[in-house]
Amino acid sequence: MKLKRKIIYPAMKIIRDEITFTTKGNNEIKDLTGPVDQRLAASRMKNGIVILFVPGSTAGLTTIEYESGLLKDLDLALERLIPSDHAYEHDRRWGDGNGHAHLRHALIGPSLTIPFNEGKLELGTWQQIVFIDFDNRPRTRKVILQFIGE
Image (cartoon, rainbow, N blue to C red; front, side, top):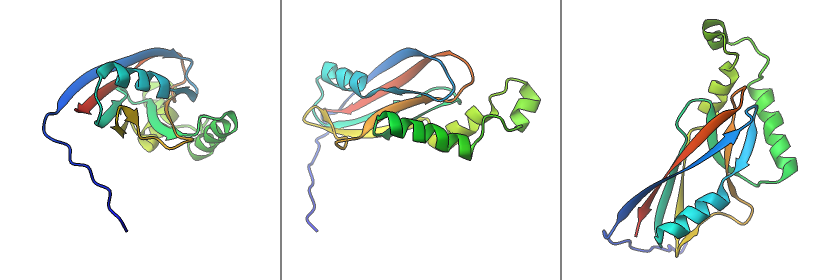
């Protein structure tokens, strides 16, 4: 096995940015690859990592091929794993009907870390960054980006 290693020198900087958008809820999936690419280009950073984080507990971030059939498959898989029509203790306590959204958030997670090299995200050919809104109502959402590198 051949190791491919590049030494990054400590001439490091951190740039914070954010993406804000509205969603419809109910497992709406948004492709954030383009906006993250644009923010990376604007940062003028060449090598490092970008950390993406969604504040809140009813949405998540992951990577997937952003293709309509696969997006529907993901929606159906989440519905089978954590049904939206199940009676959750959270719903009994708070009455907001989004217990499933909190559990899906816990399963998918609120963050991603993606390396970039020569100013390009190191994603696979069919791999896109996606935001999923699990909540049961429209929301204004924010994803925080931290570019760390040179």
